[in-house]
Length: 181
Image (cartoon, rainbow, N blue to C red; front, side, top):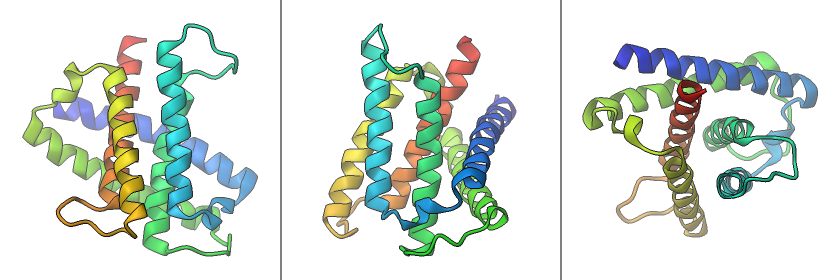
């Protein structure tokens, strides 16, 4: 089963990476000026829209849940890159370098997912997609609180751990969507 999960993870990340690469070609690295807290807010907007779409039958914007999960994955990776590189007013990050950082963080997320899957026995496969949305929203609230505390925690994991968890929950949701399609 773990081999299947690894392949499914790689497929989802490849789809997200392709969009990230195309947007880097269109916009460059304009996102580099964003503070991690602004990226947290972007993730919140995406997760909140997913929750709204899960509750409502009608959508006024012709985009579904899947693109929002892709957005969460890519914003999480951008936020983790921002934490690593630090804030800047410069947007000079070429596509090749941007993809190198993307791949590094995606691999770290994958390794975390594999370790947790080992310990939890892939319990996520029995969860509802809506639970992933709720968990992401909870992680966003935790992240905002840590950001409001200037990144300091007494006992909890840091901001990066929350981004990795949100990324992996989104991957799980997309895997389940693919399997149910």
